[in-house]
Image (tube, rainbow, N blue to C red; front, side, top):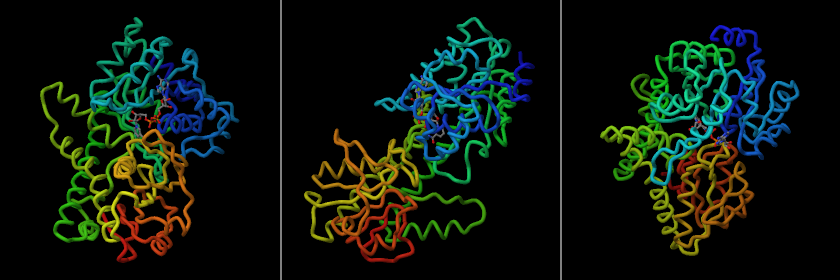
Length: 433
Ligand SMILES: NC(=O)c1ccc[n+]([C@@H]2O[C@H](COP(=O)([O-])OP(=O)(O)OC[C@H]3O[C@@H](n4cnc5c(N)ncnc54)[C@H](O)[C@@H]3O)[C@@H](O)[C@H]2O)c1
């Protein structure tokens, strides 16, 4: 079994399935197609499937021309029909892992996808979970479901966890050149998963179990959440001490060892950093342990949008304006630069808070043409000198690289800059975070 899969990998005759075609799944599917494999992408969202099949990418990191070229080779296509899995040798599951309103993990997408995979599980198949989740999900949740088919792991089929580390908008690192961790349920599972990813990804890092792989991903993201929390608190501390935090970070970053610079900001966003550490703390709660760093970082990071709103209040106050009736222009609503993803974006909290204070809010974000907030759809306004001049306060929430900072400074009446974009221009009308 093991042997025939390895041979298919070497011969590039292995058929690959990718379940969930979002920020993670679509790039993964194209990476395997580029490596010469036949790939079928499966998603429950028929609109995504139809768009992808016509070569229209909805993920900024994947160019439509790349997608179309791969479709033209006949090696890549997309469907919402899970029966396609019957002919698939290796399947990677890349479905969402959000939080419930209670901030507990919602693994219902993993469960639904696993049940579909189980319905088509056949001898010799490799199944890999890529969705970020708490340690134990692969062997406590996915494994029993797959083995309920009567097939045995490590013998009839192979199961591993391999966290996705994609960094949307990062032009230096993509799926292919970002090292990939794999941890299988059995040594044979690890070996096969390693061979599978090696065929398309430059560096694969095997670990001793799926749990180690799951935990490694959560360490990476918790590390970021905690360090961002720390630097956000340092920003608050520096403000109280009348010290420029950005200058402090720049100075500290000249140390060539033992320091890694993180930058403060308006709060955390995206599907990963604000969400993933809660998967870990939830798991620990079931073991009667409180993950304190995670809790504290979340508390500080989630207070940052309010901190920004206070800065806006100061800026308006300088102009003898109150929130009520003032016009605030928000520059950037995506959670980070040069992406279109607004999930968990701090801009949403800032806009909500301004609206609840009866402020008129307009926004510009070329990556996000429209935005639904408080049951109302708003549209990105084209940037013009008139738009900048009309705003009582301009707030830079996302540092998209298309922003022409000197021009913004020239026309805006007053700016709250949460990303230090204006650093080169020591202008009095700018309030830094
Ligand atoms: N976005 C990132 O930067 C990133 C980075 C690393 C890891 N991750 C992790 O990868 C996973 C996927 O994240 P994403 O950002 O790609 O999510 P996404 O929401 O962009 O995409 C998930 C896709 O899965 C589809 N889907 C949902 N249920 C399905 C089912 N039962 N069968 C088939 N398709 C289904 C959805 O329609 C959607 O298209 C998450 O666990 C996330 O934490 C994300």
